[in-house]
Length: 316
Image (cartoon, rainbow, N blue to C red):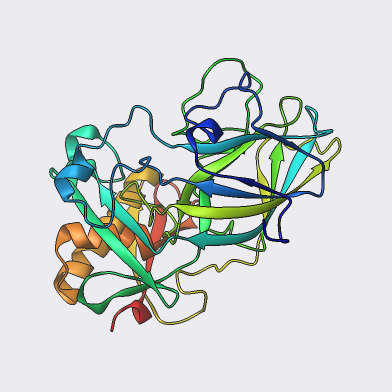
């Protein structure tokens, strides 16, 4: 065991679960200050790989899905505290994938626009993930799912995020970030997984660059923190490339924020198709991996503005 962590959890079945449930026994108990290295499976639990076809992706089973490594109990964590999770390091395994499911499944932001599924396996090299036509997306790793057990008993689906965290998909929870999770049960019962090598803010096609990964984190407890939902400290990066640079933006304007969001992304897909020569499916995947959504305005009733930002440097 290398000296930069105190404990290691592999992705063996004994260390993996597929629902939030406070009755699960911890697979590990740690003291505040200790460091754990988690091996995390990809979001589809190993059902697809670098050579998979779009058919294999479209037919992946969701029962169960979202394998989470854990739970880890932290000594002294009690309801009302915050679990402090310092994200120290991420290591990928050289590849990842982004895809969207058949429209009839109703997943993603635009299921009505994409009847058939799409799939791209990315190769990781020199800090970038490679797409079609020489497009390269910088790798910025983070856990899509990071959370603690809910206080409410029983099994809880991993797909929606919750008060205690979970599938939040906050792409700024990168190495060097600290996440504060509201503790609802004794020991907190922390788990993580669903790691991403990169993602646009919005994760619009329902997947980021999904990748099996190692996550190294240090735990601490903040007593009587009194936070209701997760909070975090981060240095970003706050753009898909980590720098301020030329962007191409599209806007969605509507009297409903979800509708405005859909319009912004649809207009970006139109742009990528007409100006960059991508198919609509490729454009949808690229939007999920490297286009950031921002709420530009929510005060000029009855219409709100959502903008989509595309970094131009990802193109050759």
